[in-house]
View 1: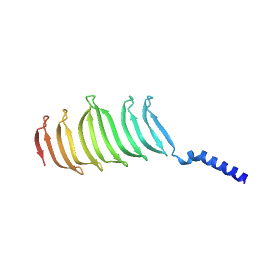
View 2: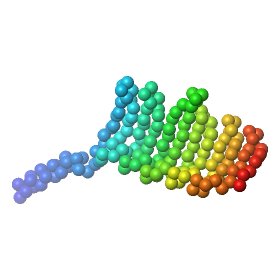
View 3: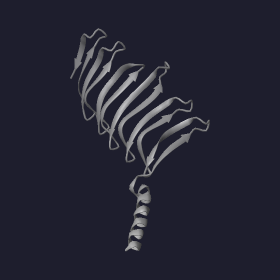
Amino acid sequence: MIEYICYMKIILIMLILNIPLFGFAQNDTLRYYHDNGQLGEIGIFKDGKKEGLYKQYHQDGSLDKTINYKNGLYNGLWTNYRRNENNELVIDESIYINGRREGIWKMYVGNTLKTEGYLKNKMKNRIWKYYHDNGQVKTETKWIDDKEIYSKYWDENGTEIEQKN
């Protein structure tokens, strides 16, 4: 009986020590570097798939995009960063659900919202708004599956100037 108890204790200890190997997912941090030595990408691999927040960088070290993953698929907020011809920071944000771009899309120039709308199946849907530099609505367009239903236009003071059906 004593041998049996000792044997069971040894088996129990071996099981406890092996739980981390079998009971939890393997996580690795992925780092990719540009030829110039600058960090190009960083993120987590879980069970061989991208998971969580990934960041990608331009060769000069500035942020290129942030992407969220779940089980290797885009999921959540995807943000792109670039400079326009006037060297202003342009940021566009998209929502992904299970690898598909679906939801609100926004574009900022500097800190000013310039465009916002809704994407479904890679097509414009619902109301899209475009803004003047002062923040006033410039254009409002209703879309259904990439087909324009109507548009309204305003001047920089917020006075409606035209409607197109």
